Image: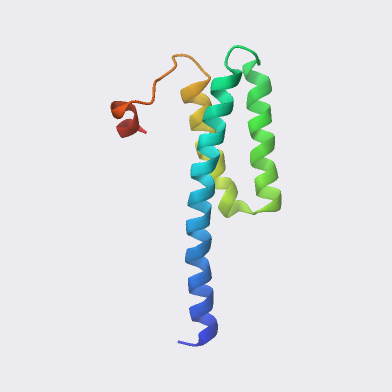
Length: 96
């Protein structure tokens, strides 16, 4: 195996780990924003805001980062903004 292929393989796994970390951070941000905006912002407006955020991530960071951000943003929007609202307890974490 050449040094080039080893470097590319290592870089690929680093990108995967970074994409997962970005996804986790996006879930936290989307959950906080959804909880804060629950009674103040219409659902269509917040959904469009999240869609624009995912499109911005896709444009500037690439699809590897946009996929986890899109999935967790939709999940946080559903769990923390749309009724019925759920608390983040032990059973919810298991389902999540």
